[in-house]
Amino acid sequence: MSRPREPKPAKLFVSVISATPERIARVLLELVERYGSMDFVSAVLPFDYTDYYYAEMGMPLRRRFASFVPLVSQGDLVRIKEETNELERRMSEGPRRSVNIDPGYLLAERLVLATGKNCAHRIYLNRGIYADLSLVFHQKAYRPLPWTYPDYRDERVRGWLGVLRQKYMLQLRAEDRALENSRNGGIDAGWER
Image 1 (cartoon, rainbow, N blue to C red):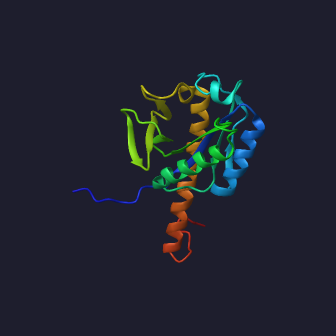
Image 2: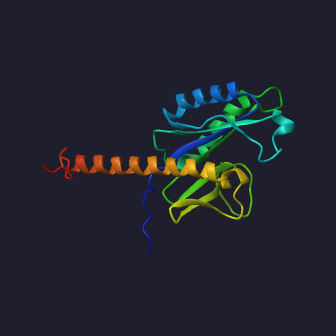
Image 3: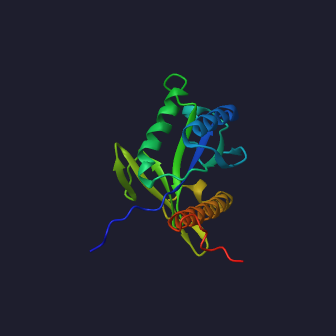
């Protein structure tokens, strides 16, 4: 019999797409207020992998990725997607969105995006939100799957995500060491003369 355990916390990141870089900056500032300081922000990049958003948001579209220092519970993905959806609604211009915010998290072994759209490979979480397994870590890199979006297949994007994974792994080690120190009365068991 398997014994359920709490999973490791996850590294929260977002992709923010808009026709105006100023809106992207505004969104990132609001997200910092909610999720804590950022430890990575990409350059402003063209978003030209698809024309899916053009009719709603205009063109040309720009995008930035960002990640946050505080780790989150994997179970928080539904709440986070709901909060980013609400931020999209608040920034809308009438019935049209002016920004698209896609939250996700990464772990040592995978990258998961939150979505409201069902598909065969997506797992229902709660309240209309699905988990989209987009990348798996194999042979020292995040690897795309047959259904991975073209932008997450991009080597430059996967390179950044690999750097975020390194940050995440260092954070986990630091948390593990802090926990061990607290169990040892504050004495660092790894310290030697």
